[in-house]
Length: 277
Length: 300
Ligand SMILES: Nc1ncnc2c1ncn2[C@@H]1O[C@H](COP(=O)(O)OP(=O)(O)O)[C@@H](O)[C@H]1O
Ligand SMILES: [Mg+2]
View (tube, rainbow over the protein chains, first blue to last red):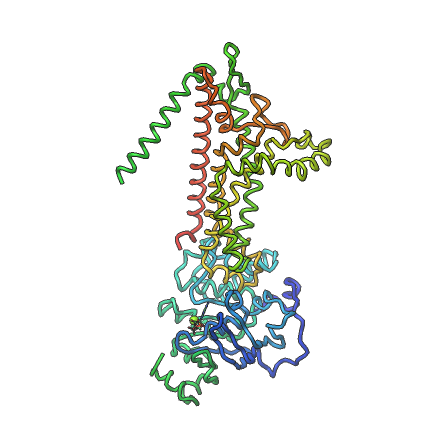
């Protein structure tokens, strides 16, 4: 997606990130360091460490309640929107510790797009305006540019052909699967470097899910994807790396093939063979 | 069901019929001119009754109340539901519920004996001294019993009502909407302004209209602070002029309305007020239902 050079993007938004002195961290896009999180006094994440390479798809798997959602929401500082939540540790996006005190969380969210479990298009907006929403929020006024990005994003989310003749219709008039792809397009329009997806297909039928899985292969070429899923087949199909979580801990992390064919931990082995979860 | 429907319909017809019947004498006397006349003279032999000044007084005082009250109410609702942590928001919400339950006459007493002097000292006189010579709106020595005071006190009365309903409406917006906005790099302010307000506009409009209905019909409080001018004098030519509303003149004069025309004129003013509040209600409903139609979010 090359509609904007990074200079242009930096000019259209108020880039306030101050680069920390570190070199680009060992070639990783996202690095999680000693990450802990609590809701009130209940610990939901325990000392999580892992690194994510650029242009890969990483799946977070694990039984319900193990902390997948909490973890992915910590990666773009969405978790702090929950008033009882606290976070300790670091998450690096390139060289930047997104939890450093001089980092504006708004900027982090622009660079790390998010797609939620339930499609959440803006109900008062048309299909077009839903996709354009983030651009307008970030002060882009150039109509032609917006139009171009909307089209690119809808194509990127494999929704363009289905909606190109009815862009003025309300976003909510679409089916559930289309709404989720609309939300993906909305996130892509921000030209994020990382896309975080929390069980994006759990509310969808198998055909719609398959569409979104196919999409993953395209997205990988442009950006870095981290996806939560409790569907192990899905993780095996779409991801390059898999992280298995259990009770707030990261039990095992590695290439997807290895996790599914030759897990190093007994707990992982038991989970992927369906013995619990 | 049928009983309830029957009862409400019966009451509506009964009230409407009595009001129409009671107004007949004044309409046969003044004709349609009753609506547009500005004189008000109950002295027998020189009688003249016109409703226009009180319609104007009602609309202007309510407009002032809305102009002041709606933004403040929305601000309070947003603060409680979107900005303050629950440990502040919950008690503030509770206090607002209490304020909403205070009988209006208590606001009236407080306004008459305390608050209007503050209005004169801190708002009206400074405005008069600064702009009285140049802007006609402020060109009158203020005494504090005028349409501006009435508007402000009405605003104070409706703020708790509008803000407590608006808060409920904002609270009912699913969190997924806020998260969608934040995930696009929206600030809190942009989230409120560009996502939450559009999402909830029908409900928020309904809350404002409810406040308007209360302001238009409010009687005692207005009677105590509006200055109770009569006839053409009740059409305010400045913000600081005394005026009169439909309900305040009825409250002021029902006691001394001994002639047929006088009492009939007051009943006819009641009819006008009735039509006005009905109009506001129906208009609001139409507006809201139209918004809901173009807002498929409502069916979510
Ligand atoms: N908003 C919240 N308040 C309190 N506890 C929460 C909240 N969200 C999640 N939790 C708790 O944190 C743990 C991890 O939850 P979550 O990250 O949603 O798990 P998963 O997505 O893997 O199902 C669970 O025990 C859950 O009950
Ligand atoms: Mg989850």
